[in-house]
Image 1 (cartoon, each protein chain N blue to C red):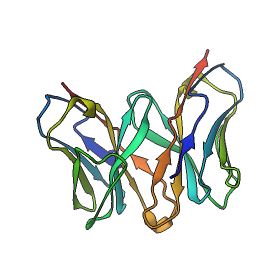
Image 2: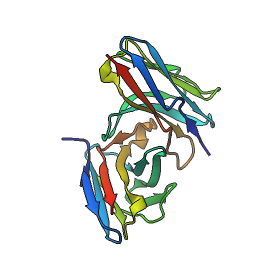
Image 3: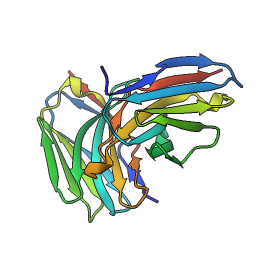
Amino acid sequence: KQEVTQIPAALSVPEGENLVLNCSFTDSAIYNLQWFRQDPGKGLTSLLLIQSSQREQTSGRLNASLDKSSGRSTLYIAASQPGDSATYLCAVYNTGANSKLTFGKGITLSVRP
Amino acid sequence: DADVTQTPRNRITKTGKRIMLECSQTKGHDRMYWYRQDPGLGLRLIYYSFDVKDINKGEISDGYSVSRQAQAKFSLSLESAIPNQTALYFCATSDPGQLSGELFFGEGSRLTVL
């Protein structure tokens, strides 16, 4: 059974810092890994999706990397801003006939002005 | 308009009542999912459907049922609601054709069972 872990559960940083959010998974037989952002009481917004054959994806100040063999992904946020404050979740999509996403519990990020 | 729409967005009900949460999508995706989110427990899969004739149980299907009325519509029912079903419920869709599995979520339905 796939397990996805995100540590720490919460993080507080001053504005302007570059930061890395970590995600680890136990089963490397994945199609892809997806990073989401969730604002309080809101739905999940897809940030980046990395296919299993890819090493990284970039969107603006965000860069996500994938090391499938070690079961790790990182989300890098450059020059953090207070508007980046949210919960960030990673999810892996397993291979197999009935493949589906397994989510981590998320990292709640607070960027202080 | 949102690509994935959930109704109602908020609902307060009493123990024992029947509740239906509805989801409709305009993305043309075959695959649809229902998740619940609880503080400290993350997102857990309740049911999923890979096409109109396909329904599958997820991790926590007890106490829930679903109906896939059309490609675009997937409803979640609580036949007799209980307080520990108080949660934020999300519908999501994905497109298997691309094998990308990227999920698109609705805004959520907050359910409170008193």
